[in-house]
Image (tube, rainbow, N blue to C red; front, side, top):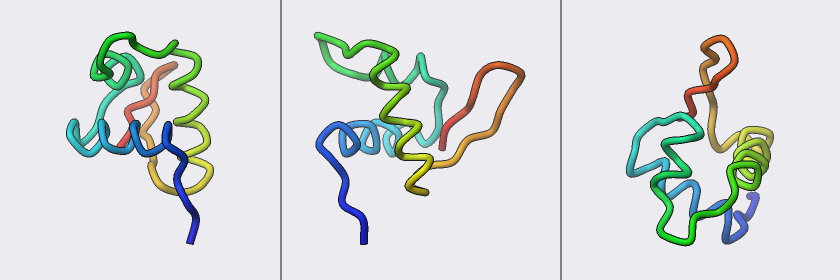
Length: 65
């Protein structure tokens, strides 16, 4: 079984609370100081690759769940 890093756990926790959301929704859900959007995007990409989350594409944006 794959382990989650602390950053991955934070994003998964936010995504569980939101049920689904776009990148900007996930970043906005972080407490201050908020991480950079690129950082969150990178961690989300890793979570997709690991199979923990999936997404549906709408043109150039993704809805993660």
